Length: 408
Image 1 (cartoon, helix red, strand yellow):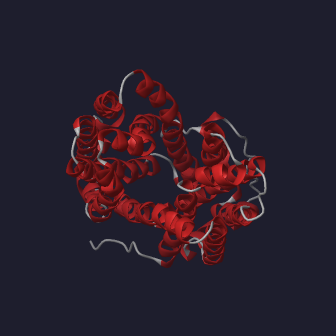
Image 2 (cartoon, rainbow, N blue to C red; image 1 turned 60 degrees about the vertical axis):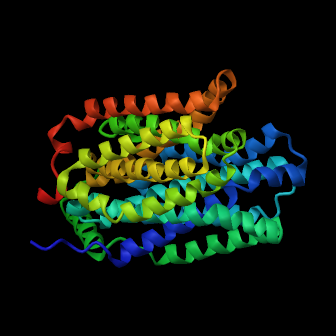
Image 3 (cartoon, rainbow, N blue to C red; image 1 turned 180 degrees about the vertical axis):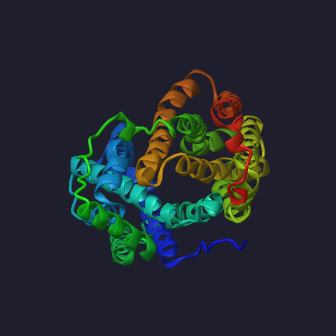
């Protein structure tokens, strides 16, 4: 039986719009803190808040983004959220005080969380169930490319021109994403099926009960176990993205650190064309355990590294590790919930990941102050091993993790 088509107009448009949303984030994430210092004479703590307020806004939105997407509809929420993001990007140009900049960052993060949840729900609905992991891996390539392009482009615009030019480019990118988003619709067959179901319900006089918000809409029980696993993985990754530069300066491996994310992105780009298909055919375990081993090795290598080539190798292993675990676990989360709860399942997974990434810098900062960067990375390698045990207990030991979806 031939594989059902994966690359459809809906999938391609969702991929493009998602890429632009992530590109907006990465264009600004490496530049906003320094902008706050130069423009508003902000302290280190205040400039850090200006940068991290985006994550705060996104995390708050994650609490109910899935519920709103499932109740109001994926496309309606997606368009509204991208409008909010575009407005926020325009406000960067006129935010004349530090509190206003922080408020704009909160608004941007808020809109981004809703947009990314709705976009992933639209894309996942367009992916054939038998090719779930493969499609999720391809979809995640958008965020991978944004990771590789965004920070470098943002720094180039600031160093070669001005922050004003950066904000105009950001606004232009947001407008382009909005225009593409207006053309994005769910597949015609899905729209027709939904319309037919609604018509049949009206003819039979059935009135659906008013939806009520509950804890299940914040964290879907079926996704919480694998989400908890990804919280630990996110905690480990927070140690990489937050402290790599300071660690590199201390150990005099700055050149290796500058190539770390290039190696990271290159490995992800190559392996996502392969591992998604492997997961669909041979089950979740083979891919997740490969990712965990690679990530643990990367963290252990960072703990002991003294040369630039070791940092670059750690970057490649992180791409094979964390870069593999993200789409693999997203596919697991989506497969664990019914079709009408896609938004909630996706937002649950992203919420747990955001908590790991958000709490990590705080906890690890205390650890680094008390010990050293080497000790921190060694302990994070141990956390990756603990995460492997947790994965086995909550998912890996079950039969569903050992069988490929393509064989079902």
